Image 1 (tube, one colour):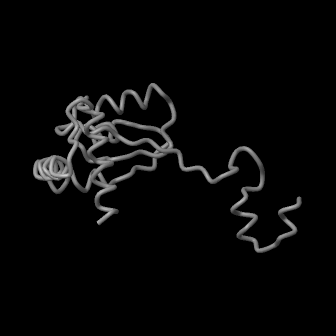
Image 2 (tube, one colour):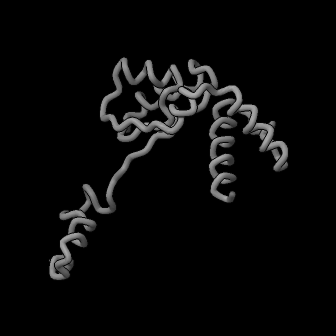
Amino acid sequence: MVRKRVLLFALISIVAAGRNFAQAAPRSEAEVQHFVDSLLGQMTTEEKIGQLSQLFVFDSGEAVEKSVAAGEVGSLLFITDPVVIARLQHLAVEKSRLHIPLIFGYDVIHGFRTIFPVPIGMAASWDPSLETQ
């Protein structure tokens, strides 16, 4: 139940931010439940699946933009160019039917690109002597 509430709160926060509903965001548990039920009731099965979809891309192209505008993507990994992020976020918030913003992530193992070898790789070797090298 706690997990469900956290996920619902996250969804509400994302949608509220995208729609500029900060002032009108639900406050009570009943309002939250009504908001969530209403939003989920508006979503098609494809849109619900889309919100659970995370694309792993290094370069956004026409296919990615089309999917974002159609509400078929909930988050993207490895898009780091601010211009590209702004364009994709604009498509999600302004062009998609429910105006739900995207989540952008950069999945980096701790230490990657800062030291070599990667700490998780050293740990996976089961060789403690690697830690001192």
